[in-house]
Length: 136
Image (cartoon, rainbow, N blue to C red):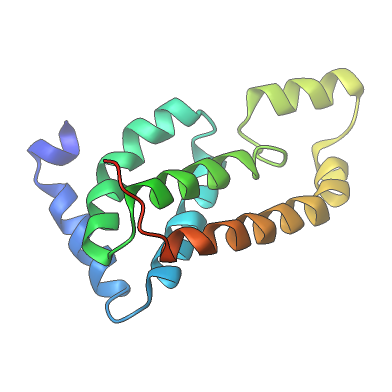
């Protein structure tokens, strides 16, 4: 509401579109995926993140020629794969505390697996950039 009423959403969309102007749908989809993965470190709740980012990402996907289904998949992958190392996740921190595993030790052990999942997630997103997905 604040972003829409303050006319800030349009400025954000314009800036994002200018930043990716002339790039392929793959680059735009990769940017959406990366943004969602990074935002997950600040907002670990999927529903809160969806409420904040989807009103921006949905029109952005329309502007850059990426289907909304591909955008939602980028959201889900960006949210899910980074949950294993998100320091703001109460569930992760509580589980590590119960197991008496320091967060830094956990990240040192888990980062390679998370990196592999992020790469695999991007590879799984690639076909969605080229498919004509109907729906929304």
